[in-house]
Image (cartoon, rainbow, N blue to C red; front, side, top):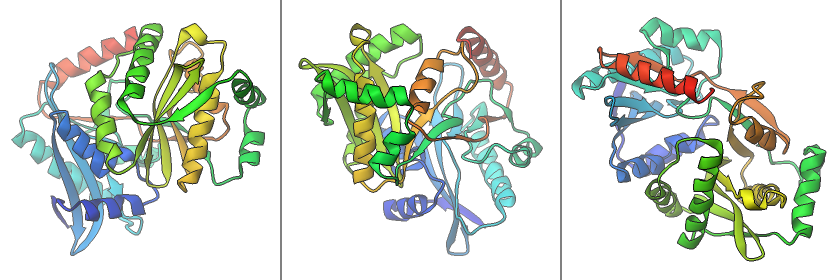
Length: 340
């Protein structure tokens, strides 16, 4: 087995998108986006002779409390391999050496592996531990099979959701699908309001703008804006990658809470995903059985469209030196304060 960097976009994309378990967080463009925000990245592949067994995107995250290496929802494995445990151990050792060379405090991996005792043990035996942070990327997601007909999707939707989709249309809500900057501005205005309402740390305007600019080059992203009397009152940013559409960002105005625009907006996004031939609409992260959690209402909203839950392993940390203790302390306190 040999690990080396991959510089050919087509080789990377063909491998990632050909695997059933993939995500836009391991796309070529996610790497480009992170480079555009100033992060150092490595696109690495593990080769068995000339055949790719796995790929993994590595980001060097520079934080005030210290830098670390991060693998977002990866690695991605060749579906034909049956020695994932050995592949992971080789990857872990490579990352450990890279981390020491880059003088980072720890390695963090958000695995795209099913949440099982066996998978967790692979990480634990190498020295990984559960990250103190709630999550870097979703670990409990809500997925909807959109290969069904629109009639069937409507029937499987919660009755209240179905009625609210129809009511939004009767109320005169119009959906505009466009990544023009005026709609990004409108999204961010509502996003800022949503942040204040739900008390979470926002992405910067520049961050979201660069994400859209990067994925837009390959027609992989859209902003869905719900207009009421000519004003954007809710907005959603959806990434189209592989066989899925990912509901990555969402926002709604509290001024027009009685107008169910968000329901119609996501229904339009689902329709667009179907037109693009996607099989899954990925609602991204949810929480389960936590009525007092800050995301409880949002989770109920997502689940009302019908679908099923998928769980992957919790984010894993491999400490490399004493610098990790500061990160562990700060993130543990933040988790408690936010009610996660």
